[in-house]
Length: 501
Length: 49
Image (cartoon, rainbow over all chains, first blue to last red; front, side):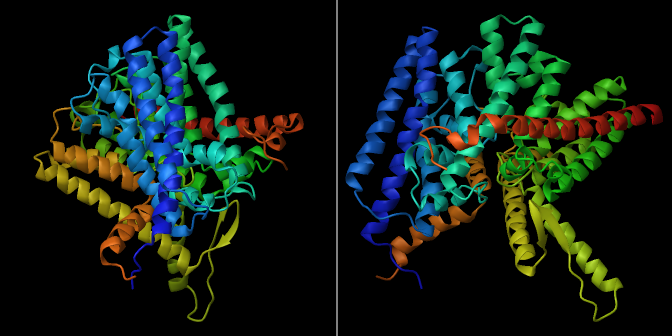
């Protein structure tokens, strides 16, 4: 029986959604200052308008939704899903005002792609946008990777007991430390240390390429943000192919794979448990699937004679597959090269990598290594049962921070989310085919959007059908939040109409 | 452990940094091993074809 939400429920959801929108407004101060520093006055006006809107909405909502009640589980999940929608609608304002977007839907597409760390984009004339707008694009993908809610937890919630529910609703369900706000701060610590090292390394590589110091620093920072958040946005339309640099590629690979690690894994390794990296089910699963897919794609491309020597083959295959598997979306080949050069086997290997994705409780999307690991262990357990005496008790364990015994509940949970992802991938493929794209293109792009990867074989463009843009926005949102909080939001909407008092 | 307004002071104590950096290096080594395997595969494929 559905219960119709009471006024108090609306108030508490409104209050916390407002807080998160205020957080988005504060975030826009960074690109505003960037634009001021570079004298981009039109962009300054765009951001002043957008910040005003965020503050008006955020504080207006808080004024209307006055309540002392804390968040319950369902509230937290509804806040997580609804705040991403509101943040997308309002966060699209600077994009739209810039004149680089074909429509407000295109602007919302790019912003949802940023928040969800997908990396597909519809922005036009990307190579000539303002520094402030480029900063905003990369900052929102960085913020999305950290988790908009993690940011709000760190700076706005101040230890509210119910904050954990919003954190879980955003697809991050591990506490690194006993307190959820401390957990959010530990996540920041890891990200900021990697930021200092990764952005500096990329900036030095940029200087070595002959970029002027300001450009090298900005590109280093932005490419770091795109890599760490596994977002895949880059400041140039040729993505990281623009740099034609082995050093740049290697640094980007290191940052994007590190960015795809579970924050709990980072914290365990950083606090002295070094063996965790080779024992953890997610890193083991990632290493096995990445190596197998690299093997398949490398031999297929070598047999087809696509690349001239082993070094080029390594650079192209490892980069695209690491990018796909971490759901980053950086590329060093042209979009159509997936179709014209990589062919069916190369595209299939990349699609599988994107579909699996990387670690849970990280910046990455996709099914996630822990679920693949749990399902693989369940298969092993079943095989061992079949080959053992009838009454033998077979237990299987996997390691994630601690040893965990495989239970039916864990396997069911992993299978449920995996099936949900597969259905979402199938739905997006069907949509692509119905809109007239080739099957292989529709699978590749649909999986890329739903797994929040951002690699493109050329389907995503400003001229693509509006309906497909809207469906990809939906897929990016659903894939990033891992279904549950979106389903709860749907249930909340239904209970408004059909619930009993 | 008391929380500050930005990063928790307990998390940024000076004596913890060598441990943090050791963890970071461990992560880089794991990624380098994956890269080395991929390079080996590319060399092997080059020899075979």
